[in-house]
Length: 63
Image 1 (cartoon, helix red, strand yellow):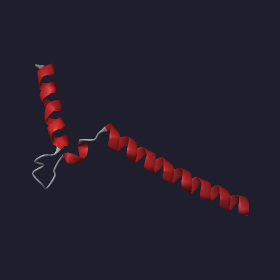
Image 2 (cartoon, rainbow, N blue to C red):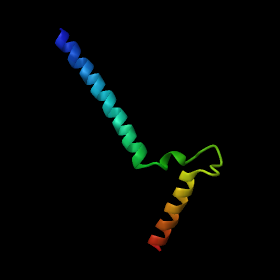
Image 3 (cartoon, rainbow, N blue to C red):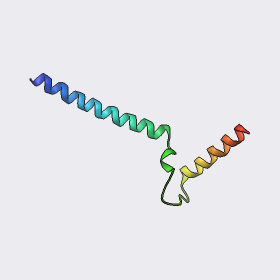
Image 4 (cartoon, one colour):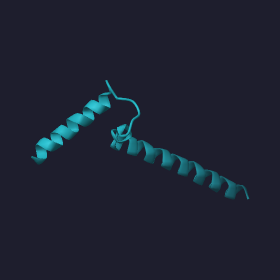
C-alpha cells in the first residue's frame, strides 16, 4: 500500500513540474502574446516597443 502512495505522489509531482515547465516554455517562447488587449495604454512598455519593431521588420521583409 505504501508503494502505491509513493507512486501516486511521484505522478502528481511530475505532473506539476511538467505543467510548470510547459507554462514557462510558452511564456518565453511567445513573450508578446500577453500584451494583446491590455487595458492600459502601454506607454513606456518595452515589450510593446519590441512588438512594433517586429511588426515593422515583418512588413519590410514581406514587401
